[in-house]
Amino acid sequence: MECVFADPPFNLGKEYADGISDSLPLLEYRAWLTRWIAQCARILKPGGTFWLMQDQRHVGYCQMQLEMLGLDFHNIIVWAYTNPTPAKNGFPKTWRPILLFSRGNPSFFDWKSDTLSRETLYYYNPGRAKSYFPHDLWPDIPKLVGGIFAQPELLTDKDGRFAHLAQMPERIAIRVLKVSTRPDYTVLDPFMGTGTVGAACVKLSRHYIGIEKSPTYFALAQ
Image (cartoon, rainbow, N blue to C red):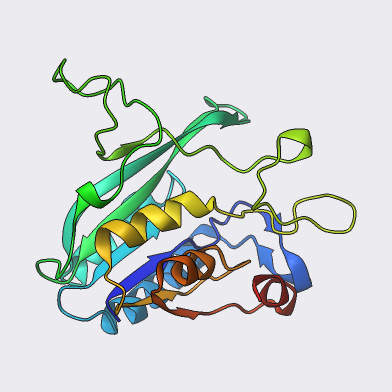
C-alpha cells in the first residue's frame, strides 16, 4: 500500500447509521486506535505515506502511536474551516489536525502539485503573502454545510439532512492524492464512509481500497 488516508470516528458520541455508536470509554477508544493504526502501518510499503485526520483531543495519542511504530513524522496539517463547531466549557473549534507520516523517505511527494484556492495571507515573506503558496495551514477548504449553501458533493437523505454525520470535503482528499501519490499507486481508506477518498481516486486515476462496516454508507459510496 503506497498511501493510507484515515478519517476515523472521533469518539464524540455520534450515532451513525445501522446502529453504529461513536461512544466508548476513553481507554477503550484509544486501545481501538492502537489496533487499527498498527495494522495500517503494517501494510504500508517503504516510501508510503500515512495521513490521519483526528480530533484535537486524540491527535497527540495517534502521533505517539505512529512514532512508536517506526514511521517518520513530517507535518501536522491544520485544516482551518470558516464555520466554527459549537463547544461547551471551551472555545469553539475552528480547525482540525491531519497527521502526515511516511515509512522512510516518501517515494513521491510534490507539494507544488496543488495550490491553495485562495490567497494564503499567512506567509512570512511579503512577496508571497498574497500568493497561493501551499503550506501546512489549509484555510481554503470549508466544511460541508446543508441548506441553500450546501455544496454539490454533499450527500443527503430523503428529508434533506446529512446522509453521513461526518462527510469530508472532497477537496481535502484531492490535495492529499495530488501531493503524495502517482496514478499507479494504491490508496487505502480504512473508514470509507460515503466514499469521499474513493471518489477522488476515481477522478485522479488512483487505485483504491475502501473499508466500511455500515451497509447504508457503503451503498451511498457506490
